[in-house]
Length: 297
Image 1 (cartoon, rainbow, N blue to C red):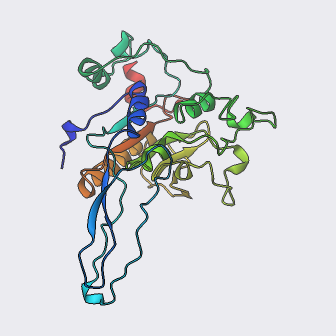
Image 2: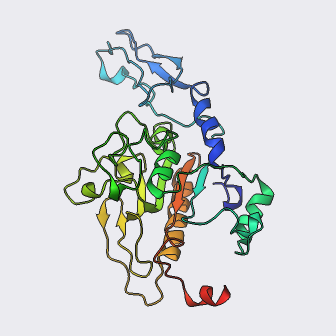
Image 3: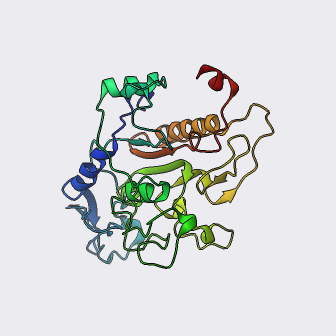
């Protein structure tokens, strides 16, 4: 199992290169289950995964002709694995924080961990946003223009006009789904503001909820903002009750949930890369900040 310090986080601009390499990388051995009645072992033939079309198609297995069950040999189990050396991907999206606020970019807000990450990797100084939540996130999570995602504005102000319906069309494949179908474990923590307001109910439709948009795991809230002391939390697709803890804060809860999920993934499937989208809502209104942080700034 890889140690925590060995987890590699790849920034947003590198993800396109990862996906682009999928079609040319990797292969899978599968047995062509063709046997004679004498019980000859099936020959194992290489099978190149076609990653250009998702979901990746299973190989066609020839019908078995062995009459004696004692001589029958099962073919190799089909499994889609990520390409060799595929990186772990972590996107941390901080809500409503300006480019120059963090100390990592010369700002007054001390963020030593972010500074260490910047010194050990890359700092990107050009990223285009729509200056609105839902459109920017929809574009980031799909690699497509926000109007192509039908996200001309936030989901709560959607209309019936094309490009502004608040409903991601089926023709747009979410990034998390692309990675999941290529052998990644995927999870989203925090804010999800990409579901039309009239689809956020027990009756759905749930096509555009996080766990139907490529994420194996979701722990967070749906919509633009939530109370950080008493948030409206969903785990996957179920509303959950939070602990009756006077010291509870949603930001801490999110971090613990992300660490817990990541630890489980690397313990159970250490060779499978993960994609984590960590998007807290703490720096967005209503600005529920612990007293020690208010005192500090």
